[in-house]
Length: 292
Image 1 (cartoon, helix red, strand yellow):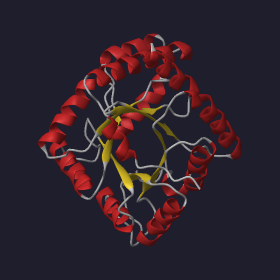
Image 2 (cartoon, one colour):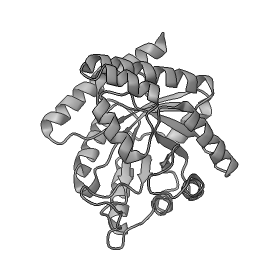
Image 3 (tube, helix red, strand yellow):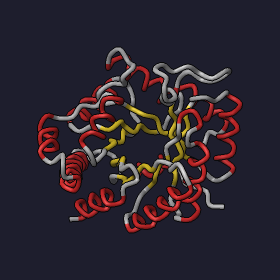
Image 4 (tube, helix red, strand yellow):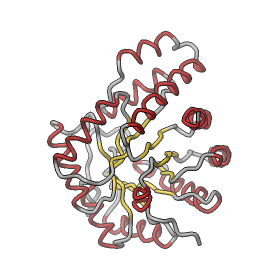
């Protein structure tokens, strides 16, 4: 059995890390398509990959399946997501132990969004309410778990203000989180301001920017409305002009993301985590652009 190394050790190499997020498909055909995507992306040297976790049980079994495929068939360092949604403490412990026994040492530790149809988060019976509680629980089970947590450059939608949101993030880090991965953003100044506020608050762990290349105007408007991110007016105008041509929209999205990533690297970001929605072409285009 292959045991993944902790991602935290990679940051000491003083180079920008490359990572990417996969989401579990809903059926067996989707799993085979994801296998093809992973194979196509093997030419890119990913430092690690993450696998999302469905709320309300929607993709939980697929998360484990995809994580196994990426780790055991493709030799990748994999960071499965784990959320508090719908789980008791005992269930979370059981999942954590299975991950550990299967050689996973990295977990993206999240409270999670309310299940579809719900507007507020309600913890399960004997469950956890906040991500910092999950960090504490996992670290108590295995101190060598490397735990990522989420940060929000433009504020979590449920937080009353940025100061409160950063205080919440500090609780997660103080509980034992090893690094932060941000929600997507399209204006790098939002990330730089966020890092400054985090450092001023005493958060010293690496803060990895999360980048999503736009693939569809309607899709990105829906995503940003849910996560609180802002679409710059310049980007919106470009996407509106090309809205009827998906290929051109994707070109615009990749170009914008490349500009972001190059600037982030120049300014010393510890890496970039790509949200590509399982789309091979976007990841390959970004990798090719960065190699130029």
